Image 1 (cartoon, rainbow, N blue to C red):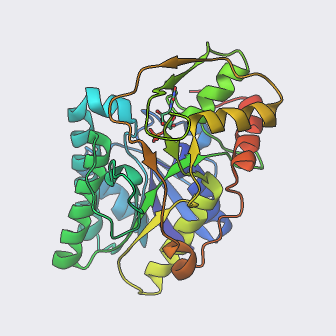
Image 2: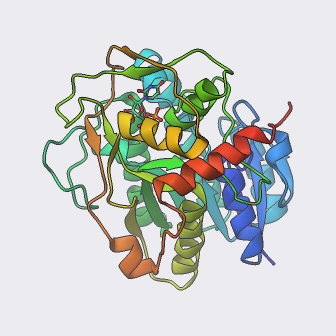
Image 3: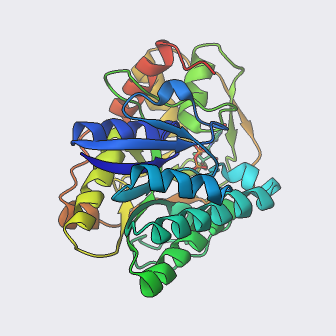
Length: 327
Ligand code: UDP
């Protein structure tokens, strides 16, 4: 069985990726520091606790498992926090990734799948966001991810590190079989916060800004189901194994939903009212982020079959009601 080192395998997207990898016949080896991840979420392969800021630990793990590829999910990923604590993002995301990339190349591992983000594009009015769009991030999170993309390109030139970069739009939903799901502490993402508010687990949802230049004044995002997203990663891994070379892919559906529209869908899926209040804009938020590319579909053969908003909310709601991980 082929070992794949999955950084952040104890986190939301990483744990779903481990399940998809196992289903596809790979052995996912989770590398996670458990700062934001959950050991309970490591269910599909071996676990190595460690921090990307510890090069010796990385070297040890590469020597032990000799992975054929890396899937790199581990990162801090909150836009708001990145505006307040940029140093955290540059150190953890950029220095941590550099350590990982160096450990991989030193160990002779030449296949690298990287989770990047549509936040690298920034706020671009009326621009169709495809993989060739300019990248002008407006928050430190997006800037840190763009920097890692640059590092990967340099390491390809110098050391032949083949990489697939996935620029995610907004990831939502949960494993429909209920084995893993989204659970952040603290939670900052729209759909889990909405479900908490609907369920009375927290106060009303605050809409961050109602004066954006959009039809209803709230920000628009392109939501993609976590299971579809990780399916693309397995296809990306096979792409690298087939020697097809480095490539960037957007992962979104091309359909945008405003915050108010997500609230409306949540109300109809759960059949319960959504307590909310209107608040100020959150620094670092883009007005509209919607993918304008079908490259993943046409080149990887990706079919995002669960990414309707109602399916994502239904799966998230089922997970939300079924309990969570324990530390
Ligand atoms: N949002 C909101 N209230 C919240 C959390 C998020 O209005 O409590 C909005 C946020 O401004 C953005 C959208 O919901 O327009 C998605 O935010 P999220 O943090 O889920 O993902 P991001 O787009 O920042 O990656």
